[in-house]
Image (cartoon, rainbow, N blue to C red; front, side, top):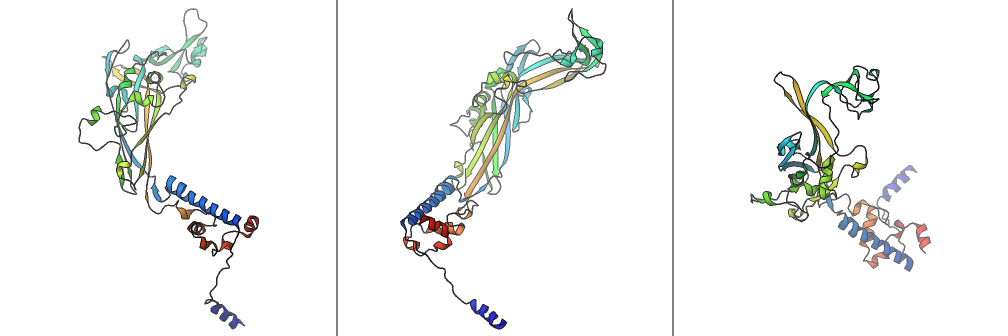
Length: 383
């Protein structure tokens, strides 16, 4: 018996089998069949191929370098700084241009600070005192400028005073600005050179055009119709975000410069152009909140004739510009989002393709294996 069973299995290898075909001569089924075919075909041609370009191989691993260089001069005449000319070395931080740069627009200057004792600023609650015991010696003022000396300094007939501190004196004063010190920075310009590369396809581009005209960068200015001019006016960069430069210059802010590279390598390289967008990254309504604008402090240190150190403290306000680069590149190839990567009405990738191929072959409808595509429950419902 075992021999016969083994022999039957071996002979069965040479059998030829065919599937049973069902011809559904029903107008409802035929109409629904064609509608589904049309829907799949529309999805393939309209969405996958035309909109999403599913036939392309896409690379989003962009490599980018950004070089920035600000130019412009301004003249000021104030009681603290007297007459002064400001150039790029004075108002741009850091001096080496990168994808983030800061332009000083306003400042509070506290000159000739020395390490000695003085009254703490009354703006700090921990510095308010009524007697010497409220100022423990050696204790730092919370969020303040120095350490307490144990003395409460009273002014006139006031009931309360402020603690005496050991610090860099005199301490910084609070100032309510009416006008930005460097409001002229609105007309300064910045050169932004962006070079991108997609190593997978060995494709690179730059936002600076290839030209032999040495005067091109001297006279061109960026505008939405001139994308290949990398010279931007600072005032325009702020205006593109819907903000006013002079208002923003009072207490500072953060501007984002977005450069988007979406390149189709099936087209000429000249069709790959940078697309710019501008936005304010800090709170647009910052003036309504406790913390507003963008600022930081730094100091310049000196020594007098006796070798005693003193400094000039500067609290600078300004606008920080962040250059953000993104992009992708696509080229004809075997794409992961092609027609074979989804399941259509046929129940799988191969069924989807056959389903579409039969769209304009009426004779195939009568010989197609419906039982392998449509479930019996579906047929009974349609009928």
